[in-house]
Length: 249
Length: 257
Ligand SMILES: Nc1ncnc2c1ncn2[C@@H]1O[C@H](COP(=O)(O)OP(=O)(O)OP(=O)(O)O)[C@@H](O)[C@H]1O
Ligand SMILES: [Mg+2]
Image (cartoon, rainbow over all chains, first blue to last red; front, side, top):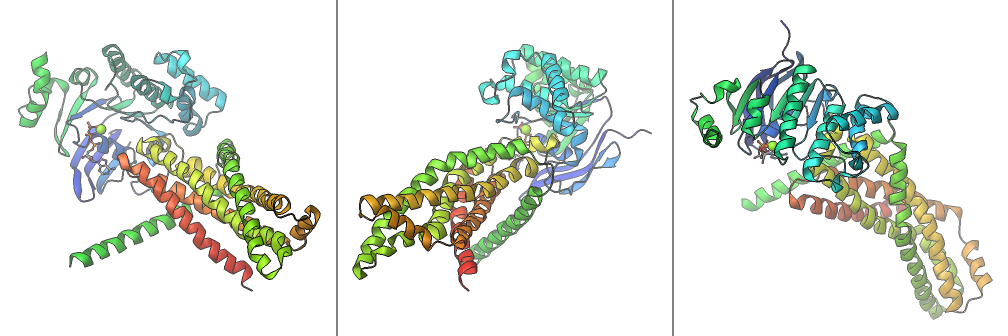
């Protein structure tokens, strides 16, 4: 049988004795879109950072395509970098570089393209995400925070990853941009066979882009399943979490 | 009991930090000698660190040279050996004041800005983003800064030496009425290459120290609003203290025999 693209077994992570994540187990297959939901502080960002090797779990194993992630590699370049891309919750654009330099950074230094090709890829990526050419030579601090987010997404897509993690990509975007982003994630997963893990607080977009949904609560994975099953769940915490959404639709 | 616990905790924390520093130091040095090199970044840092520190270093050494001439004249007239003023100014500037003052001033200007820059990159996840995009922050951020500090400091000190001696010359000639050519003659005749060389070697070491402290504290900056501020303060304080300690050690090494 084919290995799942990502498999997490018994993951545990704590900071200074405070347990943030405990007993996390899940699998994501190629071309599948997993959405992680959960209240603020439930450990969603910590979980995804463990997946790419930015944080070192205390316990547990992470497999990418059946290969165990070397969680012991010290704080240099993460081992997972070649196939995984990450959109940070706060964009994390390089302040000292322009928009186009930010986006061509990955093609240049991760995919080892020459400068000209890298710029070409960056250009394609920016056009795909409707980033107006007037913004290309600007620095991140000159952009609005939602545009920074879009640039961060363009930067992550430009390296043509096999797996991409979005940490709250649509937070702060207007409805149109956030819908567009949902379609983009959906298309990337279906057409390019990318595996996506998306953290979001927006239940509408969660239901739209997810093949499966997982809910974190106080560091534990309390529910996972298909989007259609979410509303039927009897789990008290799940019901509490989705209630505001159910009453608003 | 509580006291003992606090002392124990403090000792442990200090030892942990020291251990982290040693590992950081070794890694940073290793990455200075290991490709990939980002030449453009090194060049940019040389401009930032070296070129823009010129005014600060120039002014500091100029006035130190001037004051030194005044003070030593004042002292030396008491046993009528005014002729030693030029020599004393030249020796103290090249051997001590040039490197130490430049080192301290550049720590204030550059060590702090390195710590602030790396600290804010750390806090806003930019350092993590670098790693995700296949670039080791030690290659991309730390090595260029440390290399630039090691290159720039001796150059700054050499320029500072000249300006400082010139400051002494100004005071000597225009205020203390020395004959200009005698003053210059006395400046060069007792000055040995080793005096200047030792100052420049010191400067390189100070550059390494201040760059390392800036990078270490910035790179290990804590999250939260106070993190970056604390990192800058720590970078400057530890940089200055280390410079003064190593100044003694290196001087001892050079001139004790
Ligand atoms: N580097 C760190 N050091 C110490 N504690 C941390 C660190 N990173 C995260 N935490 C803690 O871990 C917990 C989970 O944080 P995390 O960022 O994963 O939350 P989240 O689910 O992403 O929330 P949000 O929706 O607000 O982004 C928080 O209580 C946070 O304080
Ligand atoms: Mg988060």
